[in-house]
Length: 228
Image (cartoon, rainbow, N blue to C red):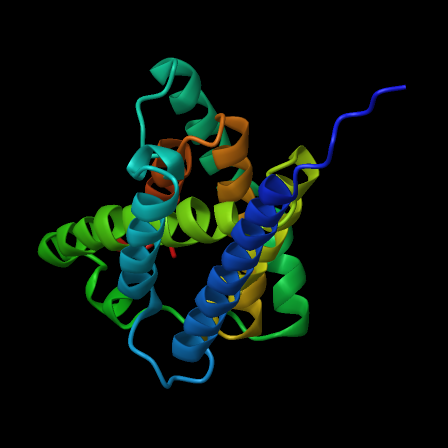
C-alpha cells in the first residue's frame, strides 16, 4: 500500500521554530527574574515589549499575531473582561488574599500608593500608568509575547495554551516580587485570571488589557477613597 513520504524539511522547520520559541521563552523568563528577583536588569516590561514586537514582526507578521486586533464582538469581549475583573477582585479579596495572609505579611504597596489617598492629581497619574505601562505594557509582555511562545512548544494545541498560561502566570507573580510572598501569590492568581480572559476571548489581547486596567483602576479608587 502506498504511504506518504515523510517531510524532513517540514519537520526540521517545525523543530527549529519550536527551538527558537524555547530560547525566547527562557530568555524572557531570565529577563523577568533578572529585574524583579535578582535586581541586575532594568524593568523587564519595556525590554520584553521590544523583543516581543520584533519577534512577532519577523516570525508571525506583527501585532495581530499577538492578539492586538479588533475582536469579532466588542460586547462579548467587554463582557469577558468585566466578568474576569469582578472575579479577580472578589475572589482575590475574599479567598486568595485571606489565605495568603495567614502565612505571610500583607503585600507591600508600590511607592506611589502613599500619595494617592485624597489626592486627585496623584490618582490621575496612577491611572495613566495603570492603563499604559501596566495594563497594555505588561499584557503585551506576558500574555501577548511569552504566553504565545510557550504555546509554540506544544504546537499551539489547546493543552499547550493552558499550560503556558499557568507558567506565565507564575512568572507574572514573581514579576511582583517586591510585594513579598503574599503579593506573589495574589499576583499569580491575577495572572491566571488575565490569561484565562485572553484565551476565552479567542486569544484577543484587548480582553486581558481591559481586565488588567479595570482591576488596577479599582485598586487606585480604593486608595483614593481610603478604602484600602
